[in-house]
Image: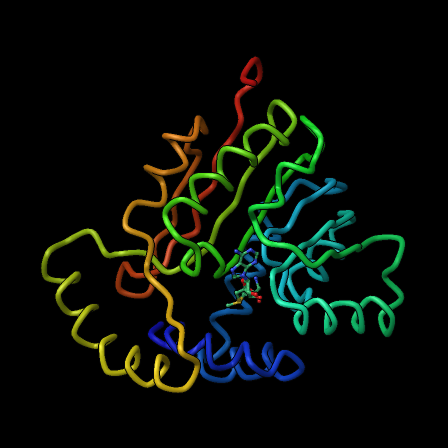
Length: 221
Ligand SMILES: C[S@@+](CC[C@H](N)C(=O)[O-])C[C@H]1O[C@@H](n2cnc3c(N)ncnc32)[C@H](O)[C@@H]1O
């Protein structure tokens, strides 16, 4: 799934982002989003962190969710707004342009579920910590958080292989977009340290991709 390395380049063209990601990942990105949407309980009020063009939101709405999304990128948000308009989603999907540092604006225990795909690998350690702290606060007791992203493989051999294959692609991405992504070293550990109980972690693609599901236990603040 090394195509993730190129996502910073594809993000520069939000209108073709989903199509291109799907193409270079040979359908895996779309499949990952379908898996995330499948974990969201039907009819949930969902917050999507880094919603991009709203593709995942569309899948969750098919399962009767109502979605609030935010994203740092004005052009991604513009493309999501075009989706809302063309697909007539205004009563089901709303978006705002902001970074994770604005998550303190949400009320306590506001959401049934919080989701994010391919965003945490673009955040700094402090941003991830802050986002997870806020996520815990704004989820209802019993609420669910689902994060799918590129992660550091667990075994030494896979770690080395992953780094070696990734390096040249990373260089190209940095040259074109002046930015890069970082696989998350310990996604389930970060969720656990933020106070979530880990329900499951499904690893795939040579152990370099994970979908991690955490629960805010009832009685937790
Ligand atoms: C690779 S794209 C993924 C978009 C979408 N989640 C998807 O899976 O199609 C990463 C997204 O994260 C957003 N992003 C990066 N840093 C962010 C931050 N600090 N706060 C909110 N969004 C951020 C980018 O603008 C971009 O839309």
